[in-house]
Length: 412
Image (cartoon, rainbow, N blue to C red; front, side, top):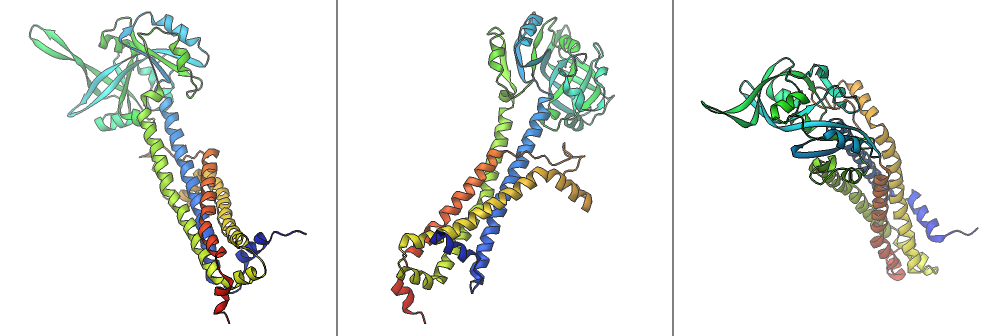
């Protein structure tokens, strides 16, 4: 049977227990460090992907996927809504009215985006009702001037359902006795919680009341477009159905800075955790250097028996490569299992020790989210394998340059 000499000797060195206790310990430490680094990278990347998905899902339940907007208002909006609704992939089209305003309660005040909606629309067009924690959307009646606030906004103002707020618009009313800001008393009829920045900057009001406050008459500020797939490229087809004076914007454009920050955070965390894999690669270098020094006599014997320098180099490359690649494979397997079950693992630890990693009273999640992406796993595994192979170059090259006469000179 043909046996590859470098592979045979390299594997024998890995599992040898004769005299090389410390060298074997360093190799085992390198293996564990590589496996731990790869596992940590996979788990952390999966958790960050889960948070990204959770935030997107919650935000997309509140904000429109595509917005058709005009600052002067859109007349005959029903015709445009009908045309846009016929675009493939569009699930619902609803009118809206929005504008800046300020809410005041006692000595507290907060600037908000006041948005007029129609609570009588189907659930698929108004998914915000799924996130109400207090009140009822049906209490938004025309002429009632009720508002639905985000939980963070309600907390900063110190209000609950039933409280009366002062709504101030950025317009003035000229009267014979002077100029006064336009104000209106509104009542809190509901509080929603999405768990993102929209909880602190949006106040919903009935669209009829919003038209009256903003003096739009029968016009609307724009149309909200809800897609069957928010991540599909439907904006171009929607733009083709409306005139140029109507602006078309997507949720990616509106929240681009937020998701760019999330991607940047994920990249920075990934690079920092890659240091663990780098340390494991340096451990492979150290273990191979120690092994080369310990095996100088064996190298000299092999050289005198006819083994050339490339063969000696291959022996130690195989030894270091097997240690590193085995660590990467182990880390990938364990990391994938942990990443898929991290929510259940954390919940079990919370139940066992009686603590909460994420307090439901403070955070918008009750379970640690995780989304395992195979492209992340492939990238992490590839980086680990490349670093493992690169770590073997110097020690293996050093072994190949060992001279038999020098190695045997002082051997007894």
